[in-house]
Amino acid sequence: MTKSTTTLRPGVVTGDDLHVLIASCKEGNYALPAVNVISSHTINATLEAAAKAKSDVIVQMSNSGAQFVAGLGLQNALKGKILGAVAAAQHVHLLAEHYGVCVILHTDHANRKLVPWVDGMIDEGEKWFEKTGKPLFSSHMLDLSEDDLESNLSECSRVLKRLSAIDMSLEIELGMTGGEEDGVGADIDPDGDDSHLYTNPDDVLVAYETLSPLGKFSIAASFGNVHGVYKPGNVTLKPEILANSQAKVRETHNTGPNPLDLAFHGGSGSAKEKITEAIGYGVFKMNIDTDTQFAFATAIGTYVEENPRAFRYQLDPDDGTPYKKVYDPRKWLRKSEESFRGRLCQAFEDLGAVGKSIAG
Ligand SMILES: [Zn+2]
Image (cartoon, protein in one colour):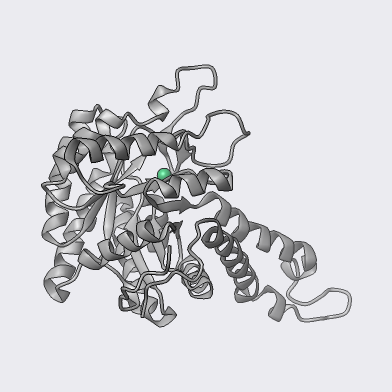
């Protein structure tokens, strides 16, 4: 496959442009990392990595990541989660185009108790849309995979109608991603029945038939993927479930190949060939959080180990050496940004995205 000839303006992509970008990923057989961010440091490191890899990228926030952006000192947690997401989105809107790549702005898992968070962000999105004529976010996620299919899809339908009205898209979850992330997720019982960790293609067909008339949506389908890094062998990755889901919709509705836009959660530690296989079945988005968190942390750890006295004394008690230039938070946060960027560049490689930006 060759690089797409379609180009988009660099910056945040929404509406029809979002679907141009997703189509480019699927046609070009690559996926974009969806990077969980919690601060200007991690946002900027993400944009820097995308610019370096000449790839487009997905910037996303979990509910607690958004709250962290607003500041944990803010008393009203729900308000913090909403305002933090808006603040981070505005930061990205202002800066993304200057990094010369296309950026999808998205929010991560929202289960039943986090529906007010999503509705609050949509309220803010509606105000933004009224003011600018464009969406604030490209898409939100609603993860009601703990509900039965009917109640999952009925709430997704309600939210998708609101989103469609402001040119946004919705990511839903069918079947559960194993593990836990920011308080949302399912436990893994190594001896138990793990069928809930695998999406049923029949459910995917029902979701397609219910949601397609209402707007644009993508599906986080479960095929044995697990949040976090666990010992190998707990759950087996079965990307063929994605192929079966695509085939079910294609054959029933006589669509083109890979009619569904699929998201891959819990990809940390997955074998490269399983990732490539999943991309071939229509995965355009792979979440990354655990590995970039670790990269951010290890860089600070190393720096502290290398400069222990600067983290105990402003002036060295033996010889009076001033440590201001060493303990300046910009010094060690920059090390973390670089390490985060480095790990992310590896993700762009794994996903076949290097050099594929369609920003022009
Ligand atoms: Zn996830």
